[in-house]
Amino acid sequence: MNDLVILVVAFLLGGVLGVFYFGGLWLTVKRVPYSKHPKIMMLASFMVRVSALVAAFYVLNRNDWRKWALALLGFMVIRAISLRITQQGAVGERV
Image 1 (cartoon, rainbow, N blue to C red):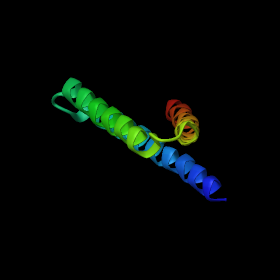
Image 2 (image 1 turned 180 degrees about the vertical axis):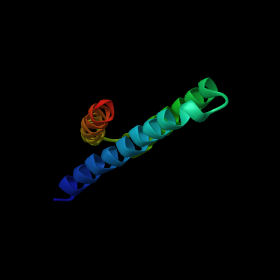
Image 3 (image 1 turned 120 degrees about the vertical axis):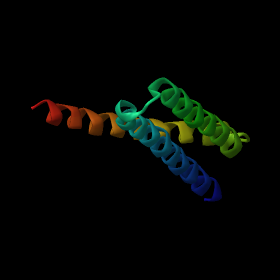
């Protein structure tokens, strides 16, 4: 039972990391047109998001490949959800 709880928490933490990563990407893309230095903004955002993501995956899941796999699955679920949301928004904006 204890292993199951740990694995569910790993999945949820992967989802939280996905929200952080894709939410940060969405905010960056929305702010780039108004930035004086868009290339620097995109690079800095990328570096912060990727560094935080890699560090969090390493720290949270270094002892068990199952936790790493479930965290990655949670991250990918959020990716799929964010793609669906942004594609629906893009279709609505074109009309």
